[in-house]
Length: 143
Image (tube, rainbow, N blue to C red; front, side):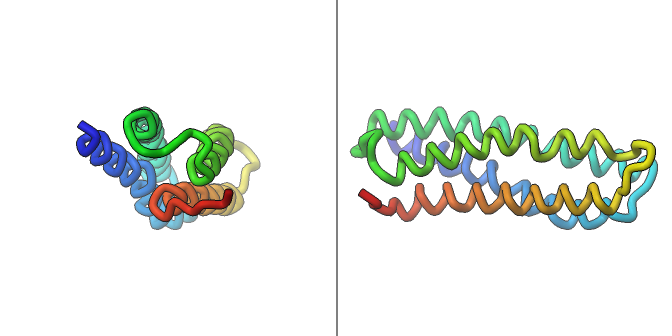
């Protein structure tokens, strides 16, 4: 059972990170997109973040089960660090994309500025996810 949970955990980690790399070229295309094309890009972006969110739920659930059934304690440094970054990333994710996406097509709003903000938020979130991935794979012991 532990192996199945570990597999589900790794798969959900892939699904939590992978879609954001697909969004990088999409965001670049949003600079010049208009009308229905822009709407479809925004819809794709929202769908990808929804997938990541649900994969994150599986990631957390399987992570809890793995700690419960595995050799690791909750106070282990890499687990504590992963949880700290995860909490920060949840707050960041809640404010990073949706408010920006809602502004597209608005009056007096620079599309290039919005794309820059979206791209910046995307890279910050990718770095947060990669940091958590490093904690889970490398399992560094800080204390």
